[in-house]
Length: 142
Image (cartoon, rainbow, N blue to C red; front, side, top):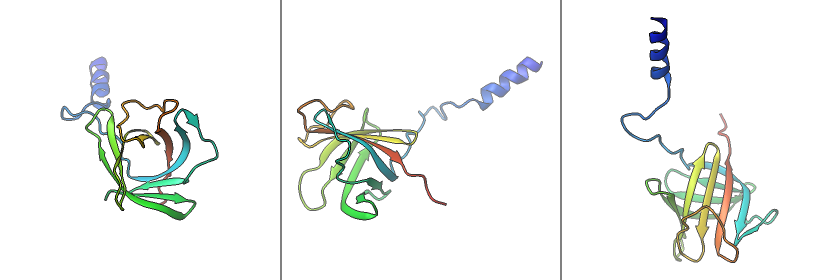
């Protein structure tokens, strides 16, 4: 009898798929700090064009250097694609920059191609215009 209750408790308490749906991907919305940048296969340690990235629920993408706003553009995502798609959208003309993204716990990995082709893998091949960014989520202040 005890074994039956223990088994039931494990099944009921175990995380799983709800209503036949896959678990939701964590949101990209929030503030993120730059951890790493690789472009064309070359890692850039101290040469960051901005220090943080803020993604709003309304589709605004704010790039900051310290507390100073450097650039404000728009973004669009499609988390239903595999891999999930991310596009930088210039606000003053220009073509969108296609990319892919993934969120794992408090890490955002963003891969974009300045040449205009959407990457299919999270890598920055040597000689390419593909940039692979790694960000850490900034904890919300209470």
